Image (cartoon, rainbow, N blue to C red; front, side, top):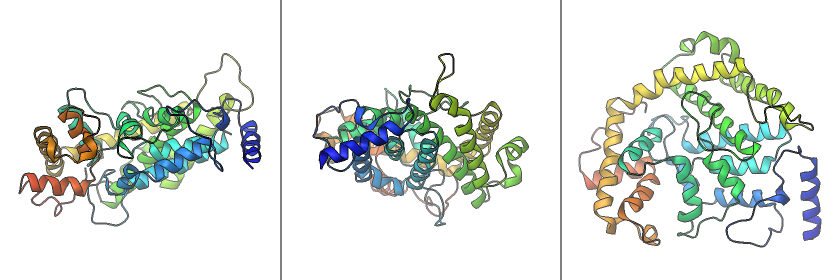
Length: 357
């Protein structure tokens, strides 16, 4: 039976682009394991991520709006599912390894803090070595999940998770080098997802209206959520096919990319969202309260490490590292409750004034 399964996986591998990551050619796990009986190695990683505690907590973590009163706002979990759906579509169209893209997209944000990027920025300023949700995602799967045992994921999946972060001025850029085309798909799918669903949430909250979006973006990308996503995804497939299909010349630029026109419009849209949604909201009263919650929690647990749950003490690390791991893993509501226990009154009016963040 195992031979039949391996044979089917090989048939699938052979049908992929020559530049795709092959399921039977994965890099060794840190701890050697017997091959799975029904799945390939990337499917095994996907399943481990879905069943992890960190993945479950995503449903109660902020994307852009903190604890919104409506039922249809995006959470970090629904964002993750949208990234995975977009990534799988691109991977399938380009004949790349869809299973690998699915695994890395599902795990890319499990290291995110409460209160979204605002919480990340605050922890980054508080800890001497800084903080990045992308590197924390990998730390979780290597050292924190399963009571310190980690998930023992393949190097390809971990690289896709850590390399999804982008510089603020270019959604096609990267802060950590992606080592596979699938990791590049993960990175650009993340940008497509958040740009579009954040617009939807901002319109839902009456923070902006469709006609506020720059004319260039509306004319090139479309005037609806579905149009913008379809334009970006289709453009990526067309622009990337020459370097991911069946042939490649040595002088070609190798990678997943957008056309210049669509990339320019997408970056303009990102700049618009930072200026009109992300930055103003983070500087408001609610944003200041959220930052104070993060500061109170981090400082308290640095000074009272005995109050940090026992699973964070397994590696005998310093109180500041344990505090960073504990606080960054909290959901929004858990962070609010903990901060109120430590400093009564700090969250007064917080949930009664649910604005953007």
